[in-house]
Image 1 (cartoon, rainbow, N blue to C red):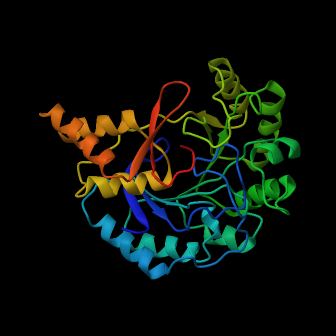
Image 2 (cartoon, rainbow, N blue to C red; image 1 turned 45 degrees about the vertical axis):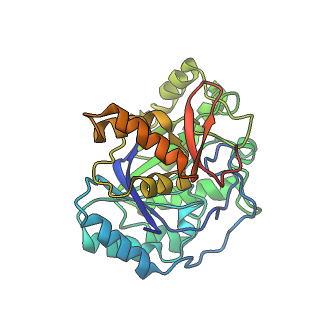
Length: 316
């Protein structure tokens, strides 16, 4: 499929059927931690990048495939809400299935009334708030001109005023940047005015293009949980296991995932072991087949964790 991938294991959404509605990389920000790499040219105008009917047809096909799906998740190779007919897709998807619909977004376009209204039917919206000050916002998220910190925060507040479903705000915690007491208290002060239902504390575990991005220490994560929990429940979501049991074409499935984000080799090996429990050698041969396809290469982080990325990835 061209637009739909998975379902893949998600830290926040279980077995998530991803719907990617943007060409890479179309974004209003150039976040230092982004798993998609640097934003070479900002995209700030909404448009119908791909035919909405084609996207919906793939969603229909996927939900009727029998694969275990916990959520249908609209994501983008960039900023999801740049897709002009996102509201139509959410509405039509909910006519097809009872599976809940989520939208992952950086929240930069929530200042647009049309965007806010288009998201109202979603069962969960997951925007980002990585800083409680303009200085840190500019250093971490590196927005396009005109996308100010004040605009971002006001968009979050305005959306909360009209949105009655689950608003789960994501905070990416980065060592030495937003993990101090002061920085976390600033974020908490903003969150108090946004009133999220939950705060998802996430860490930059996937490869980044920036060498300055590092995982925070355990004590910093504990500190973040304590400070942010004064506003809402804080979760550091546990990741469900990757499931390949309903996959007809493993190479295409793995390719679709790595095009959207780096895939942890440990997670892939576990999924193959579950798929082929009686023959561990066959799982190893499948790894060799996948690498031998020429579509993937590996990237080893400083902590020794190995990730798979597409051969077009510029990080290796």
